[in-house]
Length: 380
Image (cartoon, rainbow, N blue to C red):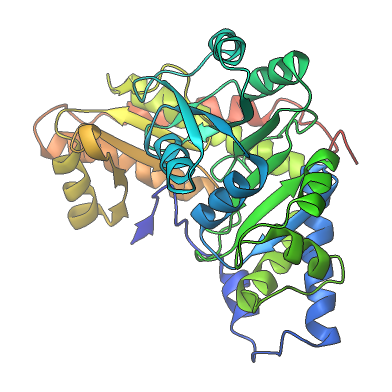
């Protein structure tokens, strides 16, 4: 079975072997060295002042950020399940929450964010997704972050990059907290969340010790010593360190380059089949396709062709299917998925198979791959 859901992604064999080694105790120099290696790689990837790793899903990191960086009113961009989640967390923690809501295929704009800030001067933190994975949508988070800081540099900008980190370069200059997760581009099992921090965010953490398990002040104090306040996700951190050993051979930008080529190739293939890409601004992390028989198509793909894709949620249930592009995916597996979709359409008597989808995919993929990739991370 080919797992092509946008999280969890398939776990690489090299990472499985690394995580299958005998368990070591986390309060030892041996583990501290592994932790330090993973942390150094994350800092290089993010280009930020500090980074924390938590034994939780990404939602835990989201809650920690709302609790730490919002004292009064949160402005939340809600274009899907995870924007909605930021709002629910804020309400649960007793914060005032102002939402900018859109349909799940529509990104927010910097102008409407500035309008909301002008109307409500009590907003002290802005929360949004880089990629809203519920519909495969990309927000213009770089522009939004820049405009927020121009408006008021003291407002915290928190970006959920769980399905963007390791997929594309993240410009963190105007972002105070970047949230990541193990089960996406890092190709690990779920259970490890990541928070990259700006200098302003670190200062806030040092001044604002709040909560117990998700107390970032406690974690910052411990993780500066390459240990954790509580029991860490040791196996996942070992896997993360191994992932970076593999990726750093070629460099981050080659991973970004290949991911973009696969994503653009898949979009072109779907359009060649006459299918509609769902979001108005597609993210590179996944290809979300609108189709009235999405669930029937997914069932056929799984049962007849050994391909597992994700469907839609809530009002999009049965109306879209989502193809993962995150991680170090072999191009021949991507080509198999493209062929399987076209064959499934024929099986459902919706379109005659002629191989045109794979032709479009490969032509677009190799045209993109033949473009020169940047050689290094701008902040290294």
